[in-house]
Length: 303
Image (tube, rainbow, N blue to C red; front, side, top):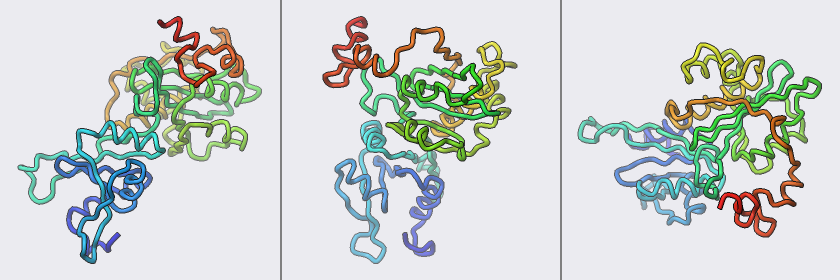
């Protein structure tokens, strides 16, 4: 990037916003288009097959750029997410007629694999799960949230001997597209490999999964004095995982997520459990032929 004194007011605004989202493709709203600049433009132009042009072409301050019409955000944003990018959507939040100088802009939403239903090859009726994982007092907990439907589940194993017991099975069962966890979580390499299968791993500040903070957030969100009514009594790791995950969704979606109005305990013991190999061979929810739901037992019953 050019040095600060050489930047135009618009690019100073762009750089300031981009600094807050260094790990995301920044979609910068300019009139009827979302524009991308610098390295974001180079990467996005390849992923979206857009023409890479330049702003200030022929000058000493030529800047690579590409863009697309604002009404195609869901299509292009979804393609970027599917390609493995986080996407920060920066909109004009001020009427240009009222602006004195630059129109005020800010990031209004961050698109990630676990927060964008319908953009990652999902089939009708399939959940788009994001997961949260937390460790409290030697106990492991996980939470699973579908931002589209509002379905919200939390899990913590009863046994205390091995805090990781069942976690890999639960992650295999839900197949989350993104896993959020406190930075510094002491995962061993085998668990990292299992968790990293097809999901985006997103570390967060450890305080987001602090038990007291997570519990307080969940109480505020659901408007309750206690989480016992949700079956969360004596499940500190599940509470921490659920609170950290909800905070992440609130931060990325920039909303209160009012449609998420219930939290349920996920208890595998209440169900007949089938290991992944058995589910695959019986074609319970996926066809062996092409991996889709078509011709699976689930699809036949659902029809």
